[in-house]
Amino acid sequence: MKTFLPTKFQLEHVFFGAGGVNYLNLENGKLHFRWESSPTEDEILREIEIEPLDEEWFQFWSVMEKIRIWDWKERYQPPADILADGDIFNIQITFQGQEVKTDCWCNAPERIDDFYQALEELTDLNFEYPGGVKG
Image 1: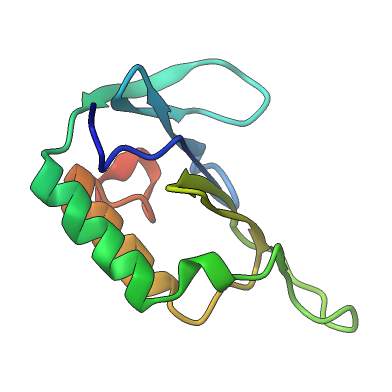
Image 2: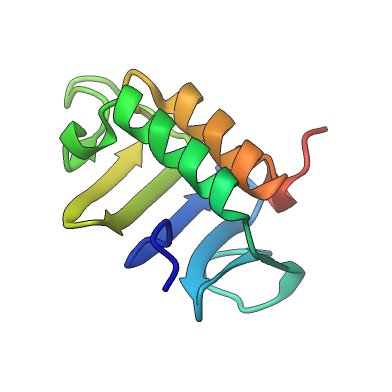
């Protein structure tokens, strides 16, 4: 039994404009990354299977505790009086009885950069960029 595996791990990042969508899901004990051309089309541009080591999961969960991910709000968005266009991302993670479900549109939790850094260290992908590759 893998004690560091989450029960649920689903991330989605929809890029404003023509950047497509990054997906990361836990399936059968492995993370599956998929980059699609758009949220409405199923054209897969890149697909990778990732199996982090227990030590990598341990480091990831340590960061999640530090950034208090379990206390994140359910929704982050700009104030109603501000017109904004931008990326949308959704996080759903369940681990050892704790759960976070966060939907973000043009706004994010205070420690989101730390989350993305920990995710990159876990997966070797930069989830903030289309296809998981910076540049």
